[in-house]
Structures are given as structure tokens and as C-alpha cells.
Amino acid sequence: MTDTVPQPAIRDRLRDLNTKAYYLLVALSFVYRTNSATWALKLAFALTAIVAVAPVQDFTESVFWLKLIRNGKIALLGAALVFTLVWLRSATST
Image 1 (cartoon, rainbow, N blue to C red):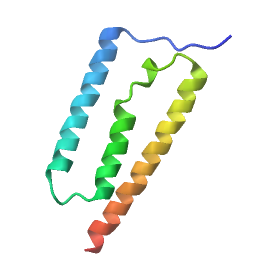
Image 2: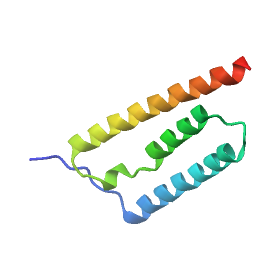
Image 3: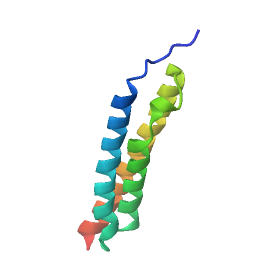
Image 4: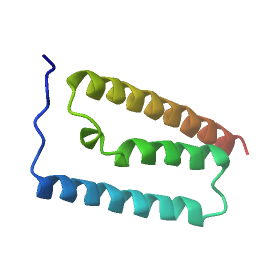
């Protein structure tokens, strides 16, 4: 028997996804509009966007797969942190 995670109401889920998409659009518009952003910062924001917007609860109801996807999202956020630190180091060295 597999454990399942209860789904929130569809209106609450859509509101949460809409809020995430709005904040992401605002953040990415500032980064990609400036010419001073390097590849490391753009990659960090892209990885963060993938993690933040992906509606994991809509992919599966299995607790095992939710934990596996969550660990993958943590790894992507770790990579985004590394790229952010690379950008900070290159920005402060110039």
C-alpha cells in the first residue's frame, strides 16, 4: 500500500502557482534586462525558476516520489547557490 498526500483545493493551488509565477516574472525581468548580469547569475536564476515554479504535487501522489523530487529540487537550489557565489566572486574581483 502506498501512502498518498492529500491535494489542496484547486483554487488554493492555482492562487499559489499564480503568485509564484508573478514573483518569478518580476525577478527575471530585472536580471535579463540588465546587460551587467553574467552567465552565472542568469543560470542561477534559471535553476531557481525551475525549482520554484514546478508544481511537484501535480506530478505524483506517492510520498516516495514526492521526496525524491524534493531532493532533486534541493540539489538544483544548491547548484543555483554555487552559481550565485561564482557570480559574486567575479563581481567583487573587478
